[in-house]
Image 1 (spheres, rainbow, N blue to C red):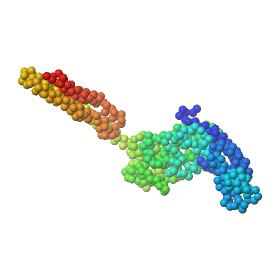
Image 2: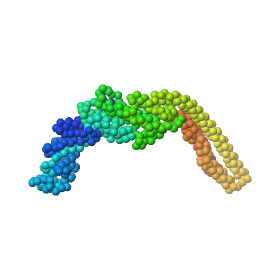
Image 3: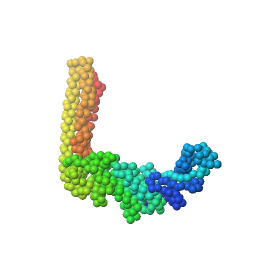
Length: 506
């Protein structure tokens, strides 16, 4: 049963193509070991028959080159847009190379006559350039298939490419590349972002999704070198049924161990001479990555165990602990002491975490104190603003009353009364503007910036802790009260000014 998140590739067309290739090999055609460059060659006795035979393969995936030789001169034919054409003829005069009717055919060949060219008595060599990957339809964009002649060619291809350039063969991110061997039989092997399979007996291939880096590795993709998670086994398999792939699996594990050291390092320097990694701890030390063949099985396994421990969480504390320990290895080789490094780093990590826990608790306490102080200041400021506003309001009412009484008792004239009322209304209009654009923003300034201030002063707190402080019950209540005050006071001022103009204007 195939898992729901697996993608199933139909390889039946590739299997039929491989059967035809096997028949050609039995008939004397030859194929050289290669990856992604499949060529069939044959020294032909009957060039017409051999061309017809090779054309039985799907023309979409075949390109022919036919080369005839005579007296050191060459006649070349090549497939151009699916049709065989003459692309090169001998430089010598045909009469010096051929006799009788052959001379006429040579002249016709010079003019591009393919039939005449193939009638010439030359030593013919046919090369068929195959593109087996084109026989597979329906692949998503993130899956690529590369066909190789055999597993030995794949293993040699990886080793010749080397650690520094392995990203050419191994994708990263949400991509997967599948190497399929035309010979041999073994169960498929799926590593992080690369898979290996044989076409023999396989008509469908279930492909798992690409692996993802460990939590701590996500922030450590700082180099252009291959990443460890791309090379490690993503799904358990029976080692007895995958012996064909043992060499490539072991090579990928060794490469992943080197990639782990690259991810752990503070600085990386890749050059033609090799890869240097630098650790900055108690001291600054630099090491040259060892050659892959110098790593034994225990060293590789221990390094991969160190990777699991170092990157199991996004916090940099484990990496810091490892850097401190590795920096003590000056002339000694840290690659052979991975177990000791891990044990020492665990002790340093516990110490770092103990200090970190105390710092987090202090940060949390300071954040709550800061929030409480902001609430206290907000309440005090709102109370002061309410008090001063009420005093202005009462003073305005007294002034209105005084003007009204003075006008009623004829102490002042109607014109003077109107002018005084306008002054009072204008005064409250000015207070309205001041409350809206000066006092109100100043009142809400601290509570508005509380979230930002906590983030700046308590960077160790999580998002959930910051949200808990910045949105506590007291903070929400204070924020609501400030909003109420900011709306109510200018509204009262404006209504009083309007009332004076409408009703109190004598």
